[in-house]
Image (cartoon, rainbow, N blue to C red; front, side, top):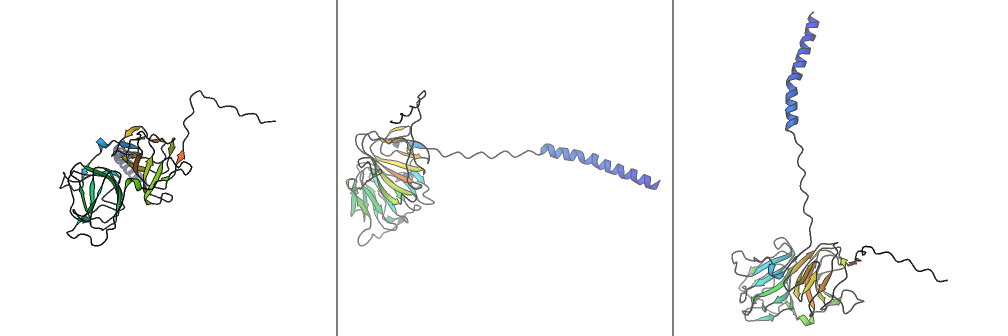
Length: 302
């Protein structure tokens, strides 16, 4: 009897436990939901910005009326970058230096750059110049018009003011527009588009360059393996769906995307380009016309 009673009590206890725990498990199941999947990051896309729509930001937030910058590619706070820079007419910086090497090309206006406000070189549209890191210099804009130029630094941006001008020969190098030695992009077309490499090795990796298209010239459809960003220095450039992008306009083309580039002005078009990998160019034939039929191969001659 005791044995049978013990079994009966044990059975009741087990049953009671099961009865009490079932609702808890059920409640837990009802409250548990599968986490929502994380949203897919937006795929990068090509873009074009007309000169009038450039997003200018003060280089020094404390001086909103001073020099401004519109970043084309990169991050000035983190490393190498390219940007359009605008100096208001008559504006000037104190003597200063930068921690990175600089390359610039004038788009409009007359910029003065050199040892001091009294000892400098006046540079008009199309002028190219390079400034080595840590060289103290003066930069100012003539009072007649705003100065806009494309600039590239091979490191993050910085500006160290100083009261002492550089002694001895300056290392800054200035090249007039007519003296820039463009090389044909396609050696078999010496009168076609040309390129002048500014930094890097276009055959091995990331580089910057100036590209020149003859007036009226248009490239066939093609793509590049690498992504590049560009800014128009002179002429009117057509690219992708954007027509007649004038000086100061800029665009970004994602690697692998089919596009054409052309010069819609009578004068040659020059633009600055920064590519994030080695240069290549893959022709892309236009899609077949709907309803077109393949021509039968000719019969072999007997």
